[in-house]
Length: 268
Image (cartoon, rainbow, N blue to C red; front, side, top):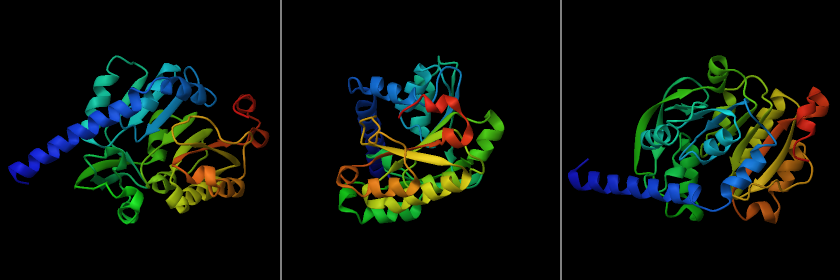
C-alpha cells in the first residue's frame, strides 16, 4: 500500500472508531435500557460472552450488572480500545480473536469507515455489496485473525448464562461451533437477510428446547409479550415492524422444559 493510500486508510480507521464511540457510548439512556434488558438474562457473578464486542457497549452493560464478561473482538484497533476501556475492570477479559465454526485462522474483511460491518462471512459480505441499504459500505482491506469456537471458550471459561453474538453474517458459523445448549443468547438479524436468522434458529432448536423473542433496532425492548417457537419468530420477523430495521433475536431455554425457575421470573 502506498503512502497516500495508507494515510487514507488510517484516516478512515480513525473516523470509523470515533463514529462508533459516539453512536454506542454517547447516546443518553441507552446504557440504562440495555442493562434493564440484560438483567433478565444474567446477574452478579454470572459468566457471559460478548462476541463481536466492537467498542464494548454491551460489555459495559454486562459488567455494570456484576457479570463476569469474556469479550472477543478480532479488529486490532478495537481490541486495543477495549483493553484500555476496561483495564480497571477485574470482571472483564478481552480476547483479540473471532469466533467461528472452527479454531484456527481466517480472513476478516474490514470496512474502516463502517467498522461494524467487518465480517468473516464472505458470502454475506458479497450479498450486502449488492444491497442498496449498504451502498456506502466498502470493505477496503482484509487481515488474517485467530478464530475460536464457542465449545473452546466454554471448555476454557465454563458455561455462560448469556451470550451476545453480533458478527455480521457469521452468526451461523458461531453456532456451528456450539455443541451444547446454553441458558440464553442473542444474535443480530437483518431484514434483507432473514435466511441467516432462520439458520441460527434451526441450529438452536436442534440443541435444546429454545423459545425466541426479538428486539428492533437499538430499542433494547422485547417486541413480543410472550416467548415464541422458531416458526412463530420467523413469522414475526416477516412483519412490517421487524422489516423496518435490523435488530436482535433473543433465545432462551424454555424453563417449563428445563425446570429452570430463574428464567420463569425473567421477561414475559
